[in-house]
Image 1 (tube, rainbow over the protein chains, first blue to last red):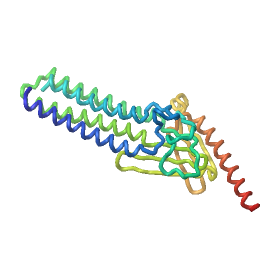
Image 2: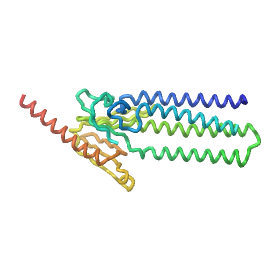
Image 3: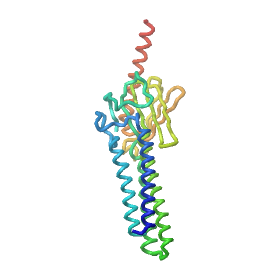
Image 4: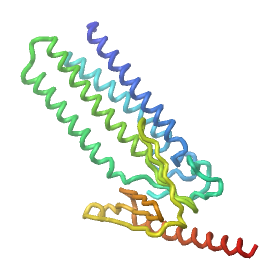
Length: 76
Length: 189
């Protein structure tokens, strides 16, 4: 693999990790104490529970990275 | 949409008075996310279109220009995604909590906003419900206006508005009965 391609991929992967991680961290801190029902709790009727939010953040991060890797492998 | 009792640790929230009993909470209607989602789709289509024209039709021979274009498109792709993510998180950081005594509006954004507004249920003079237009009536959402002596609290994009309106009216009457009962008891004492 070409070194410039590798550099670009690593740069964007780190950037995505950093931004997604920071956003999740802030959201996680702020959502505490805002009546978000937990999956184990009896009030668990909302589509998004705490665990599902976490899963969503992870899937979104991976999706962005995969899309960029695939696109760069074809178009670089 | 409306999450009703039971009283557990899950129903704890910031700013709750020890004497308050949680009744229900709700967030804004999902339609609030429709525009950010549409914008995200439009950005994706635009980026795919530009990439198709640049890389499949024009076929830029210079590798530096080609790579620079790709990096630029990636930046826009990421910006569109992160903007949507921020809006998505913000949607869930806005909650209305109703207890037996108060209505709390907790509104936060990821960085710049952290509001908490409370209004006493018994002090509410008027509770108004507005549903304008076909979409609001079809999807059952609208605005609720809560008016106390010096305070006006507007809650837009209220889901299941008819149900919430009824519950609020009922809880206000309960709160008023409790207040008058306490007043009479104090007078007797």
